[in-house]
Length: 372
Image (tube, rainbow, N blue to C red):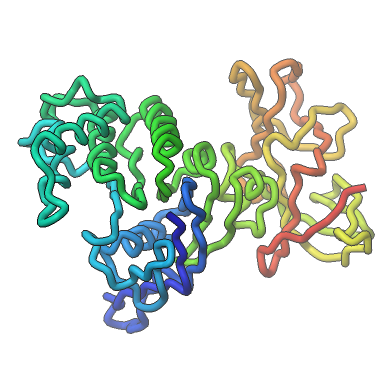
């Protein structure tokens, strides 16, 4: 099911008696979600991603704009008539019902021509339970299940009617680290098997990037960037996107372009030109370097003040500082095959040009460049 959002906007009345302006939770949201894809709706708390999901499922009405499912305008259609399956962060299971009854519950509410026999409902519930691999737990109550199992029940309940669209609102937030990894892989498997268009809301960028076909990065109700996860990571449109994506986060420095060279403090790290080959104007800039963009080198261009070395097994994280760093600490990831002497006060790095991003100090927008 293709979903089209046209100029979607949601405003809430201000609760501040001194400031009467409406709060804009979703601001002129335009996006076409391809059929059968898993979309990661990503952003910090308060960016409007859950509100966007509530507008899609019909729990809230937009202030303006349109929502289309295929060619059907569902903007004013009640939630129960949209054919949407919703999974919440807190599972929302009925504690007095068994797993089977919880999964069957949406089917028991069907009326008229859609009403199903008990046998058909039980068969559909079992099919959904098998899809999420909890068919052996059908007679248990939610209190007898782990957090991961409860979340699977919630997903099965959303899938039992085979919805046109599946909406997941931070479904992994209540799980521990190992269960989060396992469950997100299950969500991806289920989505591929069913082919249902799925929108996955999360503030965890690693979560979104690992399973999404496309990610939508939001800030203060607005779309900042849309694209395939790796493309957005490699080519962020602005400093916000660059800082939001990546673990550890991108290292940000105050720098400058001077006579065709990029400087951090007194260190000239690269010679740069604009993307069309012309000279870049001398100007102060913000420089972002991904943690994997550092190469340990005795004659490296960038000198950092060494703090400590963290050996993580397959790689080493060098923790350092610099007067021009906007991060509290700079984290550089290098191969564990490198030998790092921690006895010195400084460490030198060469910089991988394709892991460097330059941003305008005034607007935060990325400045396209080529390195020489």
